[in-house]
Length: 140
Image (cartoon, rainbow, N blue to C red; front, side, top):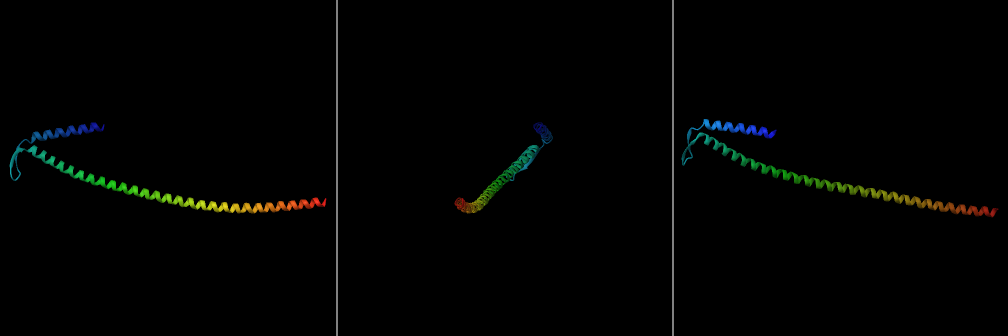
């Protein structure tokens, strides 16, 4: 559909240019300062339009190159910011991991202390039970 619209616009503009050229075949004198030239008015107008298109194109190319440079610089800044953010995230993860490891090691040390205390208590109770059963054996 878009190609058809483009074709219709192109054909219409071409017809307008042809009609314009047929209506403006009168010869005009153009002075360049050092020379004077006679040519049809339509060629003068088309030449002026062509020169305008070339100048506009050159300016546009310069602006596009400038925009490409700005985009490239912005992409580099984004990549640098992403890298800095990743480094910060990695550091935060490492800090949290270290903190949790320390907490777990402390908890394990406390549990080991509790286990040793319970083992001593168990040994003491076992010894007391053994002594008490020896005393009961002696009584019988």
